[in-house]
Image (cartoon, rainbow, N blue to C red; front, side, top):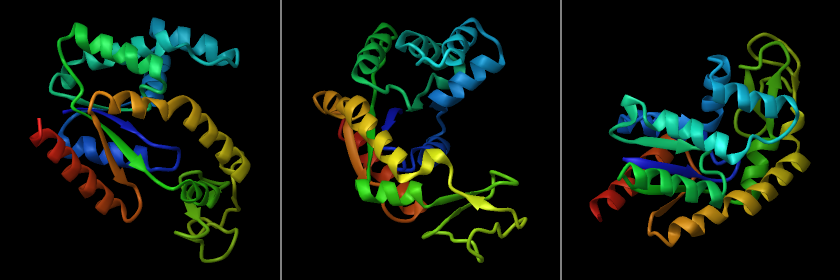
Length: 220
């Protein structure tokens, strides 16, 4: 299957993308991984992207699209792929359509992970990270430390990243509503959108997504 995964920050896209790609035996292609891989390999696209990032500018759509094109042309993506973080806006979605058209292939589904805005704020603003090891992550509501402000694993101080503050989360949601959410209507016009709730245990969300994608596939 060829799938685009969308949803607001805090919807669990990264977690579900990894799980769904594994279940469907297709590569998980994320924008962040594309940038890191190209920059670390010092490809021409990576050098170009880094020059924009070092200057504090957004990487232009055409660079992101070129990276995605290169990745989708790799042998492991011949049978399908799951795109996470791309397309990020309608112009990228239009470019993706043109790109797929030249390869004579089409998207099978756009999976929309739906989650209430206040739940997004609660999920992200409640995160606490260990200063000693950022791999130790807790949540004030869902997985609290045994002692408030202290890492269970190493005893380090737990803190809230600036990116996780409620004010920042709400700004990120505004950007999502303005820039990315319009692609849902764009793909709805093509009959591709499958919307599922991203509330509940991770396993249940994965199963919900797989069942919805299967219904979509069977209906074509």
